[in-house]
Image (cartoon, rainbow, N blue to C red; front, side, top):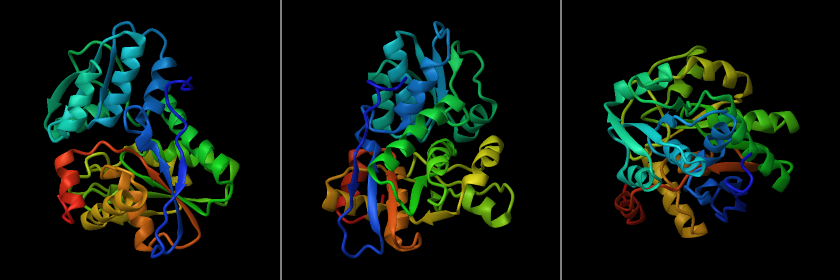
Length: 301
């Protein structure tokens, strides 16, 4: 369903002699919308049946672009429910693709995520995380990784709501059970780490940062149930580590990653993920240029 829309992205070695592992980058920032989200969004839209009333989603930006892209190809309206802290670069891209944006305070936006609906807006709601066809589309990343690198020791995946992790982990574990799968979060929004430490779901105090494409105040119960059996653990990266990973990828590999896209490389570069062959999912590259400039100059937004 996604062939001809999503592209097969390269898996490249990150040449960093100081790194504690053999790090590979899966460059989903090279997708047409600058993010992996096009895979799941387009797959879900094509499997949805009658979408003549339009498509609706709730997203900080990348899923919204994926749904807007699908809606444009299917020639139907698109409405995006976005948190009020969503970056302008992503909101502009949504509107460029023909999507209508409705901004909400974070707490109200999270309610839309939990309830899978927004009253008063027509169209089919495509959940950015829990939709099974979204996860199936994401799983193609795992298949591509194993075709290019048959023996990874670990795959590190940024964790936002769990749809990317669950899709990739399901595909990888089915073909190579010995490969370990880890979720990666920013330390200011890490409910997965807190839940794994507690052995049950935990809500945390969420802080907005330049890492806008990952992290939440809590886990979604459905995703916790699906992902927990696939998880070999989770890592947290600091804001400074994430900014440093963005900077290093730009300097060494000429790769532009957004905050969420740098979480996995940040964890790998820190040494916390161990040694061996480690694949890091660079989930997207949609970062505001002002924030990127600050990072490239050595700072942390």
